[in-house]
Amino acid sequence: INRSKQGYTDEGKGLRMPLNCVKDVGRSAVSILDEREKNGPYQDLFDFTARMGLYRINRHIIENLINAGALDLFKANRATLLASMEAAQRYAQIVQINNGDNISLNLGLVSKPELVQAKETRRDRILKEKEALGFTLGNDEILSVKKYLHIHDPSIAAILDSYGQTVQSFGQIVSVIPKTSKSGRAYCRLLVSDGMSDVTINVWPSDYAQLKDSLAPGI
Image (tube, rainbow, N blue to C red; front, side):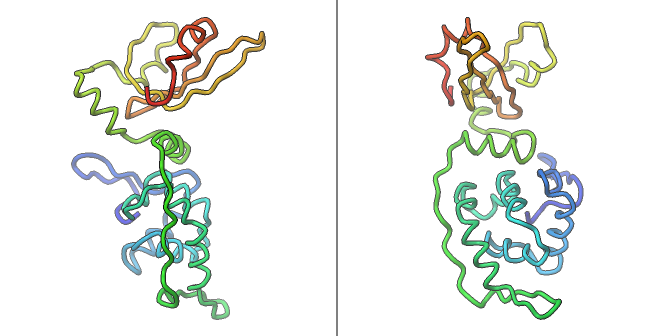
């Protein structure tokens, strides 16, 4: 939130995405950048939420930014930031000063509240990140395992271009969703990630009957 610009920026080891890559942010990205340019970097969730109130940037957009990782610099896990949104919005309303048609902030009017601490699971983090961005960013845990085991299989995204072919890849199960076919047979839908991309895979009844006890998130 304090480093992204209007477009992609090359930072040597990778590209930094613009904020408008996040779902539903759109033109709000311009307001976020303008406010940062005028009044300096955002200090924390409460400072950011209060300042966004001046531009009528709503809770949904802020939560999408959290889920995309744009507020990770605030040194709290994403579940904690999401759980603290109610308090952040109350703080934003208190410090907002209405002077007719003009709205200003008095950030020193009251003390900032404490963050509402919440536990975060890797599965929820990945799923929400995908919803906010349309994909998941690199998962260091999976990439580290691949490097340690010297696994050089093609990315899991290769499955999408290999219809009707046998493809070997490496990934970790993020979620298992049980399903029932029209004929009443059990199967499941897996969300699998290789740390850079993810894919949804159907495990059909005959295979599911043999493998269901081995299919679980984290495997």
